[in-house]
Image (tube, rainbow, N blue to C red; front, top):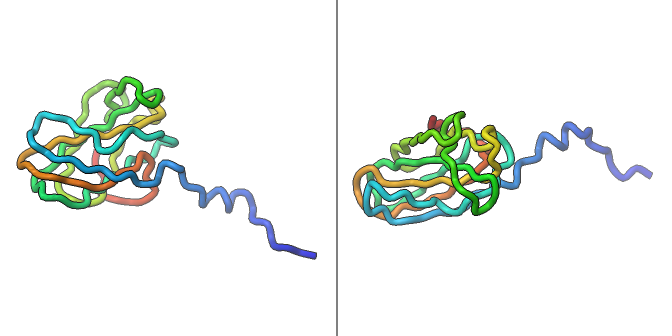
Length: 143
């Protein structure tokens, strides 16, 4: 009796997505251009893909400054991972609401948790969206 055909291992593995590709909601109020705010909490990073960042809505109308930080353990000291050299400060500009792929070096630099922080670059207002440390889609790339 035949129950069903077995899939080749490679066919099944192609459909596997990292657990960390699930979006986490974030929201905050932007009151100045100097205070970095966490966009959600740090999350495990499972591979070297870009970070997915979705600026969904809000009353804030300026652009956002964004930085990517890596940590070795949950709650650990954060290190800037926007370049291939850990600790070198790098700021991305998110020009407007939308979906973005953020090139980063968290995983390549040996860190296994990612965190993103934002601050305003102009006006005041609330803003919200979602992010995930391991992107599975194609979006506007920020470097």
